[in-house]
Image (cartoon, rainbow over all chains, first blue to last red; front, side, top):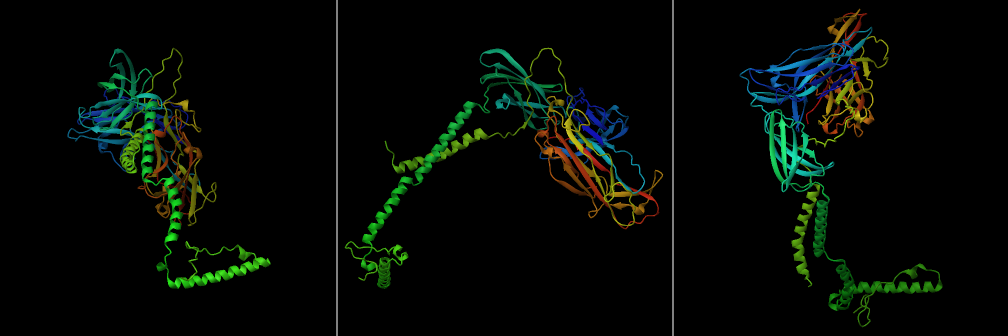
Length: 387
Length: 253
């Protein structure tokens, strides 16, 4: 079994297991290289170099092969693409390749970019590939089939081909505002990378009461992760409780390499994230709105009392209609004959039922309800009776 | 003063849209959290202490172990010697546990405590481990006292109908909180170099802590096809297949 490990920054590793380790060395000579990222600006006609260490953490000698690979960007994420090639690949060379390492040995390797004078300027993301093949395959007796393994790193890198001036890191401090995050009051410092090379910014903010002056509170430091060219990002600076909601002069400083920018904001700072007062106001407003909506809805919906009233009114109307409706001209002659017949039959059944009830032999028939009959105001049976 | 029914309805008509707007606005203020900007790591207020020994842990880094060379054995007789008689031979390789983790040291086989390494304020970065093959050919050799002599008559290639099958099993804890490995069942056929790399493990930068840990196994199986005719009989043969390339890469998110 082999181990391979990757660290972007300094690493302390126990040299026991097999494998290798790779680390990029910061280079303070340029603002873009004074970090542990593999960012290179290759000026046409010049030789641009970055250095990194390769450490053999195994107990056997290994050869580390180095090459450059391409990248793809999907939804803003840059990842290694085995089928892509780096446009600047032809300009690159390594101080040693493959890198032969004795057990537990470490070497510093240089990758140099020498773009020709006439090279057009461009920038690209890519990967440095460092690979080690498995052990030599030695055949044993009998049939055997071996698939040799290669294990490699794909280490992100950025290459800019052009003049140093063209790729000078540049950025803007856009704005600051207060908010509340899970750790308490914080200040967001909005920054934009206006250059052509990724940047890592370091900086700080200090506060002074805008109205009364007084002591300067801070500085409160911040560091950003990678901000790509053209990208706007914010960094959150946690603030102590002494920075309250009032008008402040906010001194902001950010730098990449030797390029430092400052900006003073005079702001009525509020921490609007999840303040209790703001929450209460929002809740109150929401409740009032819901109440208003409900009330409005009720105006267009028949009330329950109205419905009850309507229901209770219905029988009255029916009884009234019963009195008024059955006028002789509205009744069909044939219907009267049929209903008279039915009524007669029902009367016969009822008579029979009464007889049965009196003898106590049949009980079921006595439970049947008689057919309803409408009665005229004069007590005359309308249904089942002839005019 | 009592308002008439029509008056109340008019008032309701006016009030309803206003109340709707007010409700939307209040909920928006409460719930809106999407930010057009890329959030950066927050800096903390440093505690000031007096003289004391302060242990400094090592930098965190991604580590991964893999099997060194895959030596396949017959399915029927894993420890025995197989004689090729012109029939197809099924071969398999079952790996031991492999480990992919964030830590401050190499060779870990168990999850470390979170305090064992640090990113020292820098944003943690994610990783992914992929595997691919660089060709489809298995080259046959006659093995004679450690010397390998090629015999092209016994070469064979991976094809869609005779691929190398790879299946990877993550330990159940890989997907647990704090480990955050992307878990999908993985059984795939490799038979050409142009096949996209197969993702064995992946953890995003946002899910990377100081001790993400996962152990996993991978099995390979292939078949020596029937009908090969050796140039020499009574010889020991060996096949050396395409390179299996494992790549531990660090996406920039």
